[in-house]
Length: 181
Image 1 (cartoon, helix red, strand yellow):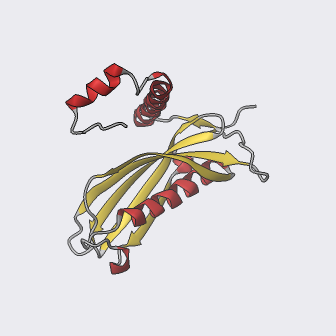
Image 2 (cartoon, one colour):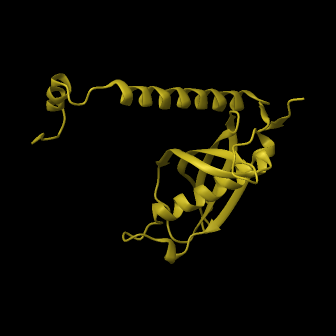
């Protein structure tokens, strides 16, 4: 019998106060620190959903939308938006709250592809995804489109001849200088 789990059953939320030790040279929260938090919540979400250890297969999208300040309370919200056989796409929304004013801003949206593994490191089947509302259907279809786009890019890499005269000539449309020896 095929097992299905709801998107709701995958949800994980993490909140953390941003400290001066998390900043970059301009005094904003370092993107690398945020990426670490994103990877942690993607792992927790995928592992919770699948019931297995999960690894990051790819970081598909990381959109930094607004800077995060020291002293803000950052909340990361994750859910499984798509499942394949052993893979899951986890969507993550990052919000930062000024804890003095209560103002909340959307700072980041990210998508991680995670793969469930068994105790010997082999891919393992994950439960099917039960979609319970139209927002979940929309997110699922966005992931289907994202997967198709990744495949199209990969196919383009395989068949495009970068050494051809047309490819080199086409570079004149870009801010690039070609000096091939």
